[in-house]
Amino acid sequence: TAERPYRFDELSETVIHTQVLSICHSSQDETKRFYMMGQGFQQLGQGTVQEDNWVVLWFLWHSFRYRDNRESGASNGAYQGYGGE
Image (cartoon, rainbow, N blue to C red; front, top):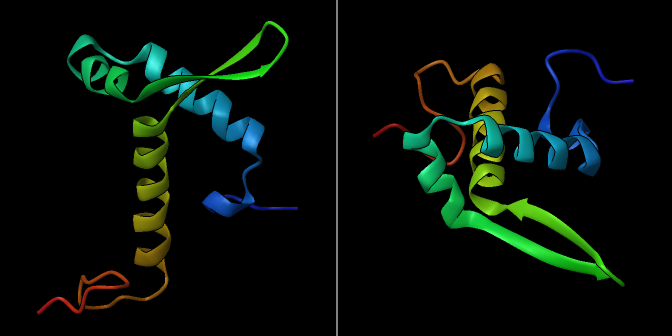
């Protein structure tokens, strides 16, 4: 089992999808207008449509990525992929 703080790859697709929609729908108007640019719908079957949002998903992924790389020991303030020069 995973322990807190969770890594992004430890979360199920269902949890990620639920949180993406929660963040999108509960955001303030100033932020929501940007989130709505990433809104999409996918046809899953007869009469079944799934909403998703790539902007919020990208934000979540980068938030986890930054936090996970920061905790991995980057002592000079740099994160993985950038040498800080």
